[in-house]
Image (cartoon, rainbow, N blue to C red):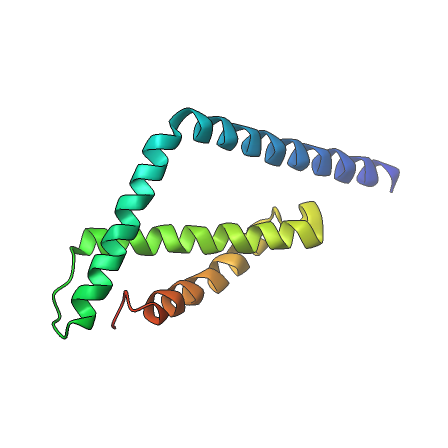
Length: 124
């Protein structure tokens, strides 16, 4: 029983270290490339606003399928990150598991669809 506890303790420490290192790396990358990252998201948000206006004007004109896929993927990733952060904050290192990733992904998918329809980006 003691060996199992030590293994779980070591695994928990490894996960905490990996999350901390990932967060540190993400901050370093952001501070190195922040103008490009901000510029990219400004262009994406401008495209989203443009498509919403085009769809609200009564036509079915829309931006490319690639752009729509990119917006959907970014939104899905954002929801996954938000849900994972909340679960990690509540449950700790237990959420770094295949089952949790599947559950978070299964929740993020309909959230993405609902959000993009609610703001008027997707009409289908």
